Length: 187
Image (tube, rainbow, N blue to C red):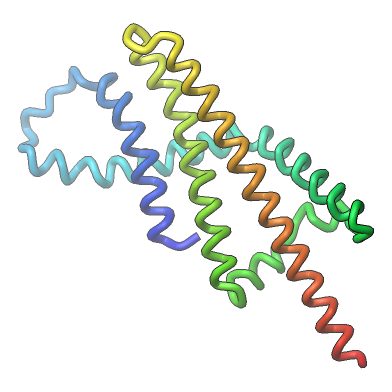
């Protein structure tokens, strides 16, 4: 992931966190800060909060992510087998070499994967942020907060599934390309 992408992701997630944190800490006296100082303070604060929320979201979603990724591997496996293409699930659990190849040799593909990953990261941060937002604003939003959490969770699940599905197909293509190149060199 490139630095500007992470900066934007963390700022978005952190800015959402400031909504509920601002309400919780609204009683703190900030009269010693003038308007310009407080605005400048909010940007780095949002960034740090974004990092923190992303870390929490990563921990919370990790077990669910395994289920989603295993399902995506199954979908790819079934599609490959329908086309009489061999597919060993264990070969696709980890593919760091191909990720490095994508970063070095396929800039457009890397950009697409980074964009999908960014969307996934923001979505999971929104899910985590919606929980305290619902709690803090319960008297105003009631059940709509729970509905928003469910919708955001389903959105994240969909994004994660399609991101990993796309990544699997890309890795498979790169592996096939490498095999074809090796076979050409042998001839």
